[in-house]
Amino acid sequence: MTAASDDQGLLSRFIARSAGHPLLAGRYEPPWRLTEAAAAIVSDHLASLGEGYRIEADVAVHATARIEVGATLKGPAIIGPLCFVGAGAYLRGGVFLEEDCVVGPGAELKSSFLFKGAKLAHLNFAGDSILGEGVNCEAGSVIANHRNEWADKLIRIAFEGGIIETGAVKFGALVGDGARIGANAVLAPGALIAPRAVVERLTLIDQSPKDASSA
Image 1 (tube, rainbow, N blue to C red):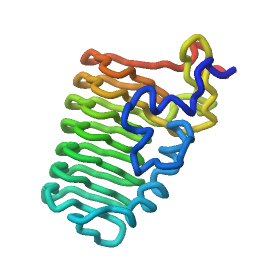
Image 2: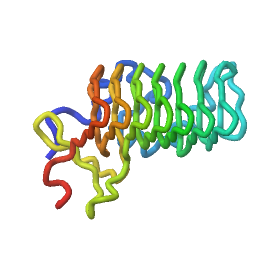
Image 3: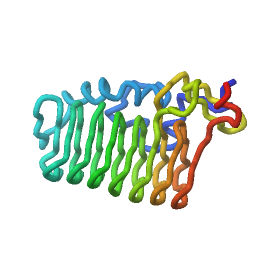
Image 4: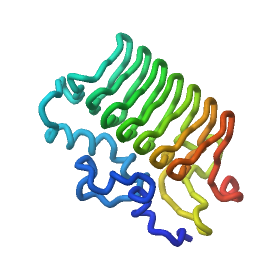
């Protein structure tokens, strides 16, 4: 069963500016299909970047961005204006940082899109995820992207009285504009975090159906 809402419309409900953003122009897939295609999407967008970017191979870094020594950027990747990537950070699998984003020291970001002002403080992991404008993830928070502990690893999401069958085995979270994720909180795969929501420190958010682990 699928939730009453159209899963292809989730992105614009959670992230206001996503519908008209050039990165996603003409794409109407649900969030888990966008992150699945992150490497191709970012790679395609490299050719349309404006002035001010330095491009080496398939990594583009804006002149106003700051990348500390010891950070690892594996393309395709786009690091936008005023972004900061800290020492020991690891970016891979198709990564897009729009503007004024932070991936702090020791954080790992995989196959994900961060909109303006989104921040991973330090020692975070976010995999196969989309973070809206102004999202802030405190130190040590984790956005998990894979049901390693379950025999059936397909990600299902209990949402608005129904169940979304994503058909995906890897998807982290769609985190709405202005949401706050507390230190050492964990978002289990398939989390849909509403705009301006607050996830308390040390909290586990798991939106899978209660019987999903035995499916």
